[in-house]
Image (cartoon, rainbow, N blue to C red; front, side):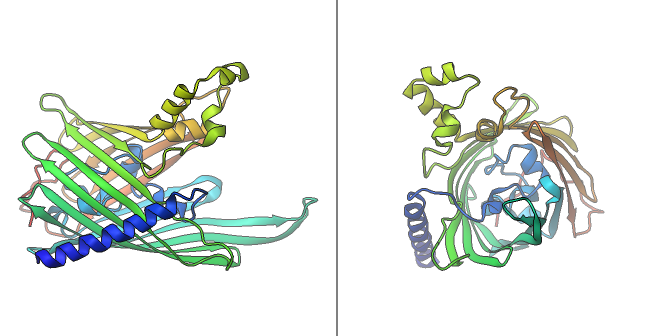
Length: 362
């Protein structure tokens, strides 16, 4: 068992290093839809939680290490309208095999519907369609004294853009640490490790949206709050670009910005924050803030609530309901709804709540 585990870790490290070296070449990446939130609760928390060690299926798609035995036979379904009539659907199911691992299965769809082709003079030529799909095949198990847990997911992804299409094989690799007495958890995540197997064109192989992330979650001992903090895209420093980093509300201020201020702006762009208000055992509120989203999407005249997100969760014996909104731009927001359902008898069990202790793993 130990030899097999060492071989597995060696292979994963090799793949991760190869992806990291590829990501350092710069440029835009393809398959960006794999980085969007896959549940309402994840969106409400600013897509910033990879370390929340509780029996909550909403976070398994983001970090496979969070696929816990206590999520056995539970499913989560999410639907939301994106901009310009695009919509996304996500479905995830977890099944636990005692003393083996917890397995997760799911799919993700992002349908952009149709676009119009027009000539240089604005004449309509034709319409074309764009859609993207991904499968999720994951497993997770504890490693050391139930304090350390690892997870791995494979994500075959397919993208159609008009008459062009591309296929990629990606993976998420997560390592999670949990201290039950302190209600403290931390995680390291290698997100979207992989490469294109079929490119849109023969001349251009595009980078994948690889991201090295570190997250921490802490529930306060004597207050009804749970805090989460995320560092993302640590594999590269400049994630804003000089145009966004230098942009301010007036040209005079932009000209006076020092290199230190610009560097701090870039550093904070790697951060995201979340807080949960644990109002009762079956109801809580969530608020998240994504600094990068705010810097990239805010208007120069008025910033508003760009980068801020929020939502609520209701948990009963038979189902859980989650709602989230996220402010992308002054022009509008997105709204998400998720439903999670246990496919096991709940007659003799109390409802699963956000404050339940996780049972001993494996």
